[in-house]
Every structure is written in structure tokens, then in C-alpha cells.
Image (cartoon, rainbow, N blue to C red):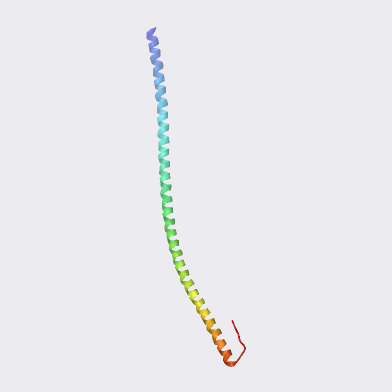
Length: 116
């Protein structure tokens, strides 16, 4: 009887060990599948990161060009403002000279006074 119990116990333990091995194998297969999916996803993420880095680099170049263009426009605007100021000052001088000449002519010809 003990021999039979020992054989039954051994058989039961062997079945349990086989079942544990099968479950372990399934778990390992699931882990391998998940790991390969993770590596695949990591690869996709790395590709996306590279694309985004290239896009960022392109945008940086565009910004640099726009900044240079903006700086050029500001310089041009400053030149135009200086020229405008000079023309305004020349216009004031001309108006003052015109008023002075008009006063002198009026005084010389005894015409009525015109002040601006």
C-alpha cells in the first residue's frame, strides 16, 4: 500500500510539475511576445523622435531665416525713418525760409503781412 501511495504521490507530483512547466512556458511566451511588441513600439517611438527632431531642425532654420529677414527689415525701417526725419527737417527749413522771403517781399512792396 505504501508503494502504491508513493507511486500515486509521485504521479500527482509529476502531473503538477508538468502543469507548472506548461504554465511557466505560457508565461515565458507571453513575456517574449510582450517584449518583442515593446521593442517594436520603442523602435516606432525612436523613428517618431527622429522625425520630430528633423522637423524641429527645419523650423529652427526657418526661424533663423525669418529673424534675419526681420532684422533686415528693421534696419531698412531705421534708414527710412532717418530719411523721413531729414526730409521733415528740410521741409520745416523750407517753410521757414519761404515765410521769411514772403515777409521780406511784403515789406519791400508794402503789402499786407502774412504770418504762418
